[in-house]
Length: 370
Ligand SMILES: Cc1cc2nc3c(=O)[nH]c(=O)nc-3n(C[C@H](O)[C@H](O)[C@H](O)COP(=O)(O)O)c2cc1C
Image 1 (cartoon, rainbow, N blue to C red):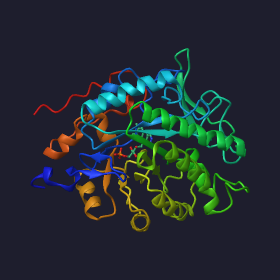
Image 2 (image 1 turned 90 degrees about the vertical axis):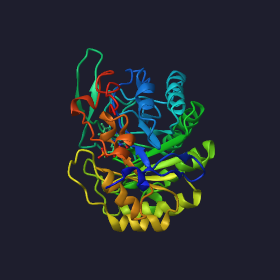
Image 3 (image 1 turned 180 degrees about the horizontal axis):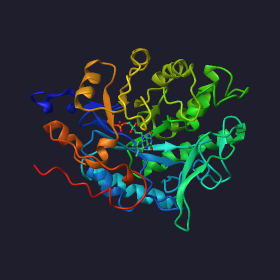
Image 4 (image 1 turned 60 degrees about the vertical axis):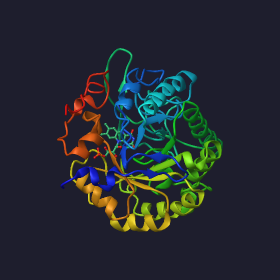
């Protein structure tokens, strides 16, 4: 590559509805588990952390809880109290001061929780216990993983309440100055649990067939778009991440069905997480799904998993993706965009700093000294 800066990756793009991005590099959402416990206030260093990375075309924050019920992991932030909203306002303004754009990823974990992390205990489309564990930090300093507890099946009144929680958190995010929100419909959490036949065994209007399994997502998107405008709503999905025994061969078909109405609704973008971050191998993208998605969804599509500059450019050149999200490379390279544009080698972060702790391994990675 003779002149990396000339690549499509570094050209601007507008999200549908008009949010302008300086380039096609997205900072992927990454939980860093540094929020206060139990208040869920983002880390005091969060504003500096995100501002350091503001040269990304778009930053998607770490997954952020819409309620205490929807919380599955200790030290993850929320956006359902005034105090949390005030702290997020500092994050948004720090990123905007540096010329960046930032959306908040909104999260309800559903069955991926235990009674210690989720107020009232885990909930899910149907009664079930996820064969998985979650990360817990106790007041006495103990940290470790705890098995998920049995999730209670949501009734229709609960579903309405949760749709409202998504809407309220989105309103808070925009009031805090965020450019919009990304609904977390990926990685086995509540929205994803509704979409999959394996985790959704309901026989009412929210389950049974593809259309019905998409109803919860549809109600969330409609409520959030109604409150903050469809141009401020993105959605992340991960058809191939069947985390905790949730593989559903019908999932791509279900998502394509959803893509039709998501397109009609005119949401800002779709974000495809192509494989689990615990896989270190290069997952081959499902090209058939990407093509079918492109045919149905006319807004920008972002892809994520193990990209480097060459693979990113290939994805953009194929015409099947418009944005490329980078996760792990952003941890140790706050100036990832500049490094990629100049062909500068990347630093790497030790896994031990991913979750928990303070500024170390978070805001102390230097920019490259040119
Ligand atoms: C430390 C860490 C935390 C993550 N947290 C989230 C999250 O909160 N929400 C989400 O959708 N994905 C999350 N992911 C997945 C990333 O967004 C991304 O899809 C994944 O790391 C693959 O991209 P990469 O190969 O560029 O790292 C996380 C990944 C890592 C490594």
